[in-house]
Amino acid sequence: MSQFVGQTRLAYSRTWHTVNLSNDSRPLGRLATAIAIALMGKHKPIYDPSTDCGDYVVAVGCHDLKVTGKKLVQKKYYSHTTRPGSLKSITMERMMGKWGGGEVLRRAVRGMLPKNRLRDDRMARLKCFEGQAHPYKQNIVRLGGSSVAQLPEVKAAFAQETVQAQ
Image 1 (spheres, helix red, strand yellow):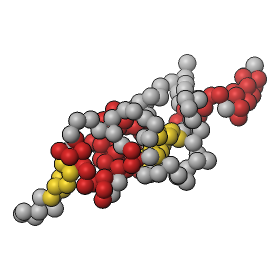
Image 2 (cartoon, one colour; image 1 turned 30 degrees about the vertical axis):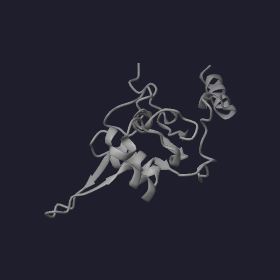
Image 3 (cartoon, rainbow, N blue to C red; image 1 turned 120 degrees about the horizontal axis):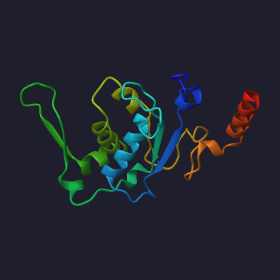
Image 4 (cartoon, one colour; image 1 turned 90 degrees about the horizontal axis):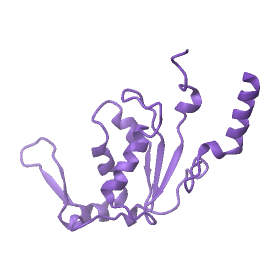
């Protein structure tokens, strides 16, 4: 039996997922975990830590990002330029006001991805938008829990392959 069963172009194809933060009741950490899993491709049967087989994620409504407790006021983000005395801190509330909720979500997801050479490529597939409008509407095939396998084009391709195999 071939060792390449399941490693076809369709298995490695990237799908586009959308997350509406306005309708989602999950807090920041749980949302970032779900996004990181989709970006890594851990939900796919062909997952391998050394290959980049993840999907695209479009997060809309980032201005409605939810956090628990007093994190909005107490959580701080730090940056340092390696020069003496250059440590800067900013609270989550000020960061959301200055750069929006997309930057907060991006930093949370970045911290949950593995620290390796694939992290920047995976982060490039995360698209964050403050409002509901985004330019990737034509790319999204998974809406409301429907699967790619339910699309008529995919069903026709599978039917054609089974006919050719017989």
